[in-house]
Structure formats: structure tokens, C-alpha cells
Length: 159
Image (cartoon, rainbow, N blue to C red; front, side, top):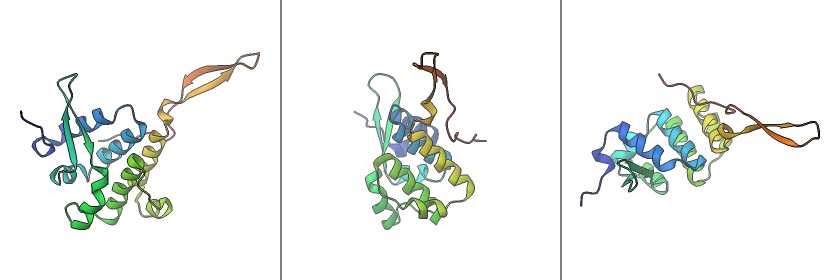
């Protein structure tokens, strides 16, 4: 049977499969959306075989996962490369998804404004701020669910 490989798919299909694989886990969603929106890493991760593709048994699509544990060794070996800021974004995504330790102060200080905006949106997403609801209280002081709140930091519009 044919096993799909990330290297055989176009980038849009990789992005769709990664999102499908992350849905339901805010941290995974945030890490994947950070890399998709940042734009530098997915092609390299694809070529370096750091994205695993699995057929979705319930539908016709695919889902994918990033091999977060393999990122540092791939960076050291030169299989994936980026500027200091680009590597900071990759490490931030790995930290959000899998808890890889980073010095957040050092990491954030080395990002330009667009990358910092994406990182803040990713952190807000991982915390579930896009799914928070306002709490109101009735006259008796009983909490009531109010309107859905916007995310603390929204993902920037791509364009």
C-alpha cells in the first residue's frame, strides 16, 4: 500500500494536513499556525522529512505532525537553516507544541515586529483566548455566560 510522504505533497496540502492533525489541541494548533503564518519553515521541514503524513481513516484527507523532537538535531546538522530570528520562531513553536525549554526574554528580544506579533498570537491561541466567554452576573450574583470574547492577540491577516 502507498504510504503518503510529506515530500510528495504541495505546501497547501501540508498546511491543511498539519492543521487537521492539530485541531482540538490549542497548543498544537498555535504552533502549527505560527509556522504556517511565519512562512519560512514548512518547506524545509517537508524536505528534511520532519513532517509525518498519515491518512485520515474517517475522511478522504490527510493529517500531519511535525517531528518536534528532531528539530534541534536537524538545525545542528544543517538539514534545516534559518537566520537567528527565524530559528527563534521555530524554537518558540517547538516550545508551545511540546514544551521544549526556551528563554522567552531572549527569544522575544530577537524578533522583529511581525514575528513578535505572530508569537504573541500563538501564545494567546495556546492559552485558548479565542475561546473565552465573557462572564456576567444576574441580579442575584449568579454567573451567566455572556458573549464570546475576541482573542487577546488575533492572528494577523495574511495577504
